[in-house]
Image 1 (cartoon, rainbow, N blue to C red):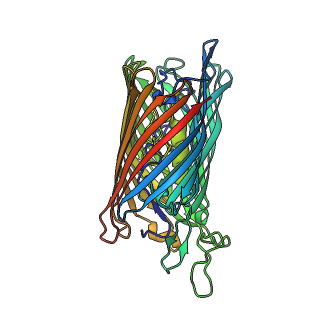
Image 2 (image 1 turned 45 degrees about the vertical axis):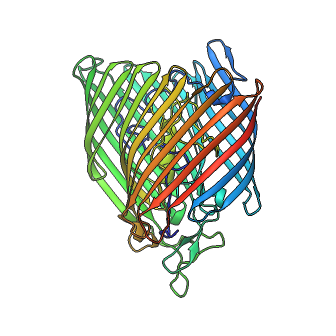
Image 3 (image 1 turned 90 degrees about the horizontal axis):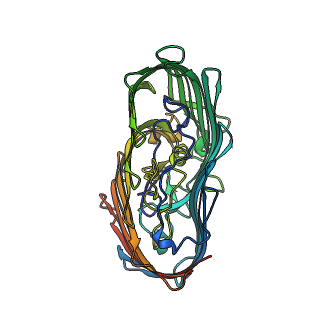
Length: 571
């Protein structure tokens, strides 16, 4: 299918369908801080959901009030994938996989991890491939007040949002991301001191797919992003010195993107006043100064004024060219927020103000009516590149969750299964251009335990307006808007003592002002049944259907049906 020269467009599909754009307060230098840096230290106390498909909690230990759970496994599957439209190809694969699901929850540490490597061996015309997927989030309290946090993500998707890797894999895209950093909270007399630093790295690999350029050349698509952010804050609580609370804060954010040496830089300083209205309500006002810049260099041109493409299939950046500004905003910023916390089960905040040279607003809602249900809603507005959004999403995940995987492909899909905080990763894989962007949107998730059933649903909307310098090859993306409205759900449970089932589904409505690509709607539904043959050996049957519908006459709709029969041994 055709695309913009620096555009990869993907439905959430069988990749991680719920990665949060960025929640207000999640990323240093991107939002106002009201209650401190980084919120809580990540040591959530939410209930842990069971994984009916795991076949038992092998490796689980409980010592001194801690919970340690490690589930390594090996797996052998037979997969048949049938392309229903266009064409009627049927391909067969043998898949060998190794993986581990682990969790650690203690008084000073928390970790959730799901990692899986699969080797897919094709029969006949089917191609061999390697698939690595995983998600992790954890923290460790080194000393009172000093916490180290880290997270990681590896996942895949395709242009169409379907399981195209089983039908040749030309449009497969792989995303890797990691981040780590400390958070410090201490006191100097009556003054609370808080600070955080985060460093992250993300990489997108497009596999064997190629993208056409304006002059007819074809380039591969990959991207590296390095993110650093720091935030410092000092203040006194209401009633300590004055009836109101006072604080000053400063922050800096920088993201360096490999494609044409792009850079997103955001620095701000602010002063804040906190006014207690009642026992459960506070109003916070902030005023300060911001300096925000987005810039990039141009491509190298040959003697015939054509862009030069290197041996790696990428545009060659002209390092000697001047950095061109595409976004330059500096001046006064302000913000007013209302925070409401009537109980430990409910918290709400909303803010409106001026940032990035225009009006901005956002908010968060967290509500847990009991220990078996949780609702999370987030409204966000930020500037970043693709890697920066992923890093923020990882930073917002809880540390006590179980990954929800597609029963056929093994890919991460939907929201993580957790009864803590923000447990969805929405919108971030919905579209991918090489340009930086301003993202605005909303993400909501509801997770529940119904008896022995685990269920969750995520809904969201993500709007990205891309920013690139005029006079460079990126200029054609400047001002383009991609919108992704998405929904994801899962439901699983046991069937007696030795069997169980799971289902998950997704839908994405993706629109773009890029008329070359058009709009696309992607769908997917999967179901599986497992039975424990022995206490450690599990047999699985699974089936999935995926489709993509395009509004361009030049692109035909895509549908596929995939089935799996396999064995897993849990150590």
